[in-house]
Length: 360
View 1 (cartoon, rainbow, N blue to C red):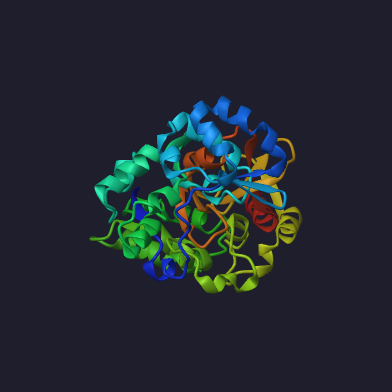
View 2: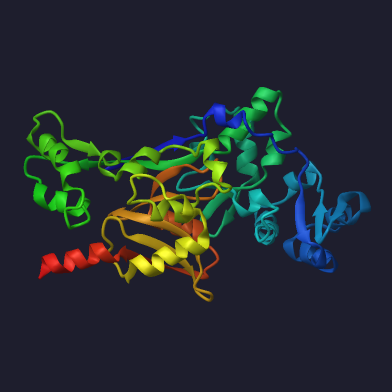
């Protein structure tokens, strides 16, 4: 059983960031310039809107990049369909950070998502106006436009803080006197008793209790994910040159202390090839689920299977993305929206070998 909670980055973290400019900016490859008018016409912009974007003062060239500077009013006038078309193309370049990694509003409306936030009602209405669908997920990319409506510096930071808002599941295991404790312990110790001594006393004590009937899942995770769950990366995590991403998160799931070399995608891939076996559903606790490109086979996301449809994930290599628990179906909506990927499970070779020996 579980309940949804909403997380926001702590104010102490937000204070360390320079707020983005309130001038919207769309960045295209310079080679795309001859196609711009046709692209915007296809997207559904009016001739007047397109003409404003073609003005010399609305364009800045930087190396092989072309920055367009649309007005706030133009951005606010776009329909969700027009926005989705344009931002899908912008999301292909990392320079368009809020289009590539937008605010994800999963499972509920904008009004419900921000209901408990500190934002003014008109700001929430503005987010609703500027949101659009990316596949099956409602997303929001116009952080600069929203910041242009701030009435003070403190409110601007409150807006930026609200844009880090993320929904996570807080999950509890139901444990009663009738629960099959040996089976439960076996599952949460990878099926081979690797962590039995860590979780058995707690599970048995709750089963024997007359007042307690559930156990927070965070208490039975391995040491590192237990420490990181529901938190945001600290700034000192950047001392290694890169912030933790999904692959670092998944491959460090079993470790007491994080292996920082897993920040390197080449070394992370090497560990998977050397130490893991591909497996199919039904997945077991600790299996890593890689989201693979159907054409290249490259992994563009990974998360860790916990139980049922629940996974442990970090959605993005940035300081404003926390470690959370989500339903796999929601993660698929976030990462498979282009229809060009699939999910493949991997299991540690030593765990799978031990399981087979026990089964025999």
